[in-house]
Image 1 (cartoon, rainbow, N blue to C red):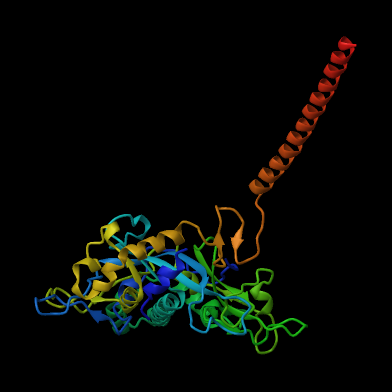
Image 2 (image 1 turned 180 degrees about the vertical axis):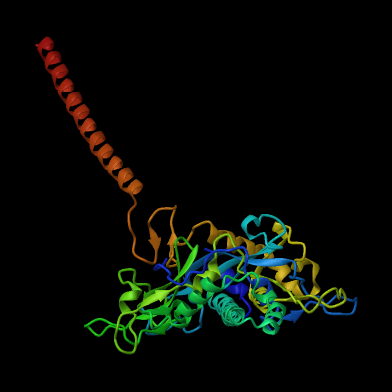
Length: 417
């Protein structure tokens, strides 16, 4: 869905421990598996003069930057939901970057900055990560079975089988079969281990087994946490997941079909906001391409989808492949300054995690009930005490002046007598 620039203009003015976290290793099979992923990848054509121009993202990788809720006036003609007790509407945004190559830890030049609604971001990135995970576990399972078969053949002295195994060893060369098999088994048996996948609750939904004894109904949905550096699942009081209830823990309302309490696993969801790491490389590697330089490079569908849907801020960051160079983004170019200003306002901390406007960096918010800050209390107390002191001093001066005037008149009267 294309991000509305009108929405941007009007808006101006973690989690539980994860038992399924993969072991960190630079030696993974991702390079091999990426060639099989994202079968809907889009070709970036070498442009001729008469061809429609497209932005070439193949030299970039995508990096999560910040998540932010924003409460703003509902501009719908009907004034919003008639059953709602507020005229404010909560918008959910994610800011991300396109960084050159895979330099997501030092992405400070020749990058683009973008803003998109959270639902679009999570739908695209979770779909991509789920497919990466599926392919990873398929490869792991194949390698695990191959290793078991190799051990059996070696014990039996089967040389012909050994030659066949050597031919298929390349895809398993960088895989730690023991650790990956254990990890994938935990993922597959997540529910049996007492966990639910947090990624299944990113879309706002009613908690079927949730609710208190008073009959209240609660909803689960994705929200920003840790000053926007993370995304977690929270409890909300409305079907749009705009009224967050911070007094309740989501895991107290997670139950399976048998009524047993469950915990949330963020194994998949946390990969969409990896700190200092690339969420995805926009270049689709094709191991079948070989030395065929004439074959067009392909861009990952996740990068293309989010780029098309996002508001763009590129010129100020030196993005070499930016929209300024392409004719079919005239509207984006004209409004780029507005997008950049809006992104800056979200990054500057002008909103809290629920989307309320933060006033002067204090705790006071608009629309969520006023609260006096410590500085305001001190200033108010100082002015009150100062006013009382000045009033007392003025009264003392008035008393002294009045007594002095009466004494002078008495002395004048005696002299005249």
